[in-house]
Image 1 (cartoon, rainbow, N blue to C red):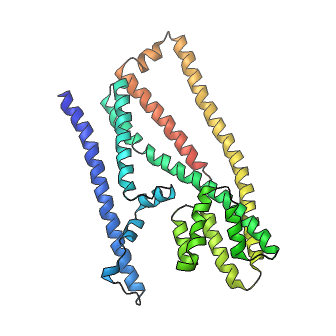
Image 2 (image 1 turned 60 degrees about the horizontal axis):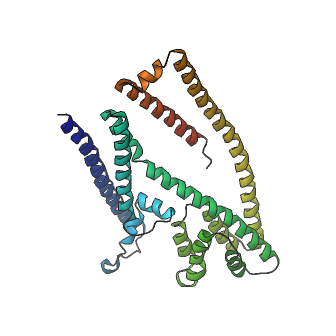
Length: 308
């Protein structure tokens, strides 16, 4: 009987994940159909040739594919590989914890917790790429502004600044602009660049270029204002980071105090706490949910102190 129960505990989450994935695909396709219908209604001059439909645009609407591209994973079918990794990771970690705690409840809970851990790692990769790109973009804007004030044209100044950039990611993204601008135009180049990195600064840079060329004034002055704005934004961000670090240090000190109090009480009670929380099945479940609650609190704290 216990084997049958364990079988259903493993199979039911897998079926739920497969059902959720199928529902997500269906939902994405329905959204794409609505998008096409709205486009046809709002743009009467647009004609769709059935023989020339680019089916890759359907994939572009998928949330997971966009996130994977932001993280640098643009291989076809990467979303399916990622979902398999999430499933296997959740099963392996939960199975390992099950052998330690020997609790089916803990097995199910840890499975649904750790199945999302690869996605959190994916978000971290996206954040690291964004910070690397934004830092290099600020350097490029400073160099372009300086060269334009010296009489160098924008295109030439931008190419020289990109070539001197130390970031491989930044070079890869801006090479789209350098190599394809004369073929597909500036707007489509930036549209392709937006899909490779999640950067608000890049979108602001694009708007600055568009506005600066149409404003009739000195383009270098517009870029100088953007450079100053990004510099001020960076200084404010550093001040906020310093404040949030103090909050996080205080949180970790409270957790350390709780652990210290637990150890002292356990010694005073002749190891009774360890015998309950680590020696009995009920105590293991209680300790597990205490740890989950603390981890959830740390996660909420990181979200509240996150800098956008």
